[in-house]
Amino acid sequence: MRKKDVLLSIGMVLISVSSFTQSFKMVIPQIEGIEVVQGESVLIATKGPVKTALAFRFNDGRIVTGNKKNSMWSYDGGLTWKSGPESRMEKAAIDLGNGEILSVGRNSKRRPDGMFSLRLYRSTDNWKTIKTEEAVLDIPLASYTVTGSGGRVDGFLFHHGLVQLPNGDLVGSMYGNYEGDYLLCDGYPTELNQRKYRTVVVFSKDKGKTWGDPVLVAYDKMLGRGIPDDHDMVGKSIPESRAGRPMAVPAITMEGFRESDLTIAPNGDLICVMRSGGRNPKMGVNLFPTPLYCARSSDGGKTWTLPEQIADRGVCPYVVTMGNGIIVCTYSRPGNWLIFSDDNGKTWKGAFQFGNTGATNYLVETGPNQIQVFHETEENGEDALRGSFFTIRKK
Image (cartoon, rainbow, N blue to C red; front, side, top):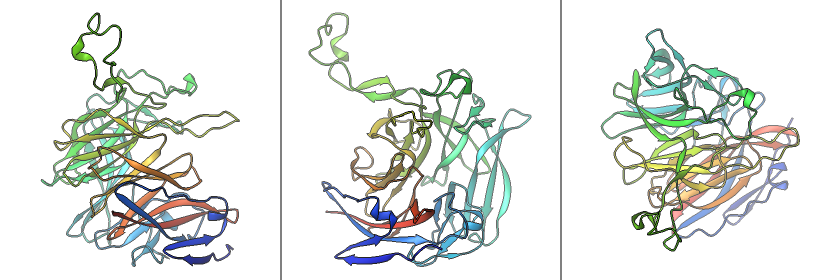
């Protein structure tokens, strides 16, 4: 059995005396315009081995984390936890209000008519009862996708990006490959035939029953440094009109763009944050991560800015727009991190490490100016799950 943590309160910071903090010291930087204060880190005692930190907050304030027999529920904003029914929650989920909640499965399967099917869970009584449906996905150019674990999916994959526009339409982000994609993931054996992924958004006008109209968010280009004004060839082989401004350049990625998440910024822009690498080093080989990227749409997902680098690493980014207007993103590998934007996702700042694992993180807003980040840790030699609180507010 795990030893109960001893908690020492020092001002507004609660320090857990366990392997969680003994092996790692958190340093929160000074962030211009934003104040971040560390709060309590709650150990969530799951029934079995920890396999995921997946978390979802319902509109009524309930929070569920984990899955299957490890589903843990909180009814007091994440302070206390107890086991409950299996959540059956997928990574891509949304509470539409009035008791209707959707959760969309990851994989798509090709149908005889060339379209794809998706497994979808729907509840109309606030997740008391759940029905399984088959949704239809239409991505005409979709090819098969080889996953990081070597599996093969017929088409594109949902990860966890799912939002509802003001007009009621749903927007979901997916990753995969089109027919003709040939770029292989850098640093992977060619025998795996793992192609660099592209991220797209798809739309549903009928609450998830059908999805389609794919729009490319990112594949092989990024916003990069342009041609310097004083370059010797400007005005010669390079027109002066092309100098002195950022421009589209080949993207720096290991895997292309994948595992994206979506949020709606305070000004209405759609924000898409994406992984580009992060394969775990194995067999004594050092592998360095590639950047975390962000793209924005100001027209409901019809067009997107070129992706921009916002951090030096990041798998499974999870992003939330707080009620105070600050956008918070958590990501990992190596380490567990938080980063912030207070200008609608145009710029990002204040990245700091709050944990030292390579597992994936999830976060929810638990109250005014407060978030809880769910992350896997090691407690006394055993895998464990924590929900760590942070106060985040504008200065």
